[in-house]
Image (cartoon, rainbow, N blue to C red):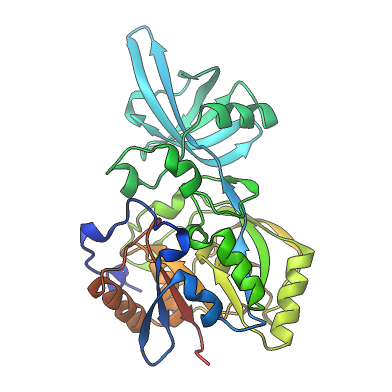
Length: 348
């Protein structure tokens, strides 16, 4: 499909720079099939059914933005590296600024630890070999790194202390993401307890979100786009719970596109899951046959992005455009710190 089909005009002022407080006060657009309904996130227990199973991504965002200094005989240069993919115990791929000033073999000091530039490409992505590895490197990154805010926020304001908690789900537990699974940012401990009380189930998968989620689609046709790869895992317990829910005719609701991609990438043709782990580069566009997910709770995404393409695959391109037009007209807030929407694949 032509990528231009997934374009739309978004006023800059609708890009959220801070989340709603408290989290459940964010707005929630619900597509019930016949019309769009405007709610708030805190209404979720009344909008879902007893027996619905929500699937959350429990990845935890690491402080992946590192500031350092490259020193050579021709002078010193400040360097910022945002980690995007772990390649080994002591090796990461990273976006580097200014990437053009780095050469293969350069040493960069990040606080108390160093890295050598092992490779680079024309897009400003470098491969860094650190002088620490494993848990020691993780501890150093945790001590010296900063929250890797999305570029559409970082370009408008500096990161601060509030982002440390704001840009993390309350149920995050497995370190590895360099971007938040933002649909989950709307859920507070109070809301989770209210959902428990309403008989709504909860299960967890892990997908370590990569910075590739922010990369634009540069191809003119979706068939020519190369999707980024991310590591994901589904436990045997979670797989069994989802399979049981499907057999019982209960609805499975993915909290975020990362949870949806995790489930759909691991399902067999019959829609059954088993325990699995490893990389996925699943790219979902209109025409895809969904096997597992009945409902999708997600944020509002960028024009021409792979995430908006996924929405279009889930509810149809024209319906997706109508939902976004409604959101823009009603002044919903967009992107990572913005509002949410709840879509059903087959409203019933």
